[in-house]
Image (cartoon, rainbow, N blue to C red; front, side):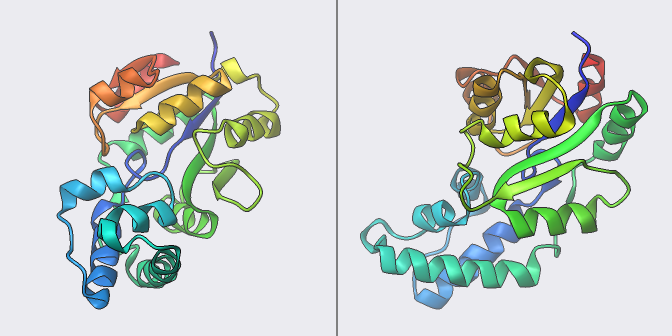
Amino acid sequence: MKYKAVIFDLDGTLLDTLEDIADSMNSVLESFGYPTHDIEAYKYFVGDGFRNLVLRALPESCRTEANIDKGFAAVRNEYSKRWADKTRPYPGISTMLDGFVSKGLKLAVLSNKSDDFAKLMIKKLLPEWEFGAVFGERQGIPKKPDPAGALEIASLFGVSNDECLYLGDTGVDMRTASAAGMFAVGVLWGFRKADELLANGADILIREPAEALGLV
């Protein structure tokens, strides 16, 4: 199969965002008088949007809709101040992106992060590459693992689903790729482990960004 496009997850795949997310959420928890969490816990809190991040981070007895709404607004505000403090592309990402471009593949991002943050981060942290689509969580469009966003990108690019590689670091990403009929590439430099990726439909696992170029 000759692939024509590659869709990337954002957090844990292109960018190491974990510390800024954890710092933002922990700051909110402290302000509410709740216990904070270590960085390892946040590897499993993230991936499904800020509302689910707040839900998972709050003490179980405090997970009311009012608290979730309050926490959601607070963490968005906090994250807007510090999203670029520690966040950087993973080592090897620039070489991988250059390689895909040189091979003529179209690039896109599909994230469950809020759409405004996803677009801002790509613009500021990966400005050298042209992404034909950058989609975060948008009103009226189901989040991953629903394949709607991935299918929209394929249609936008004018390519068939099986001509797309899909790179991600979580089970949600692998289910998204599988549901969209795309080749699911599980990356092991991100937030989750191999067993989760394989259990959710990864077609292949890679340990370094450069390995992705061998698929095309």
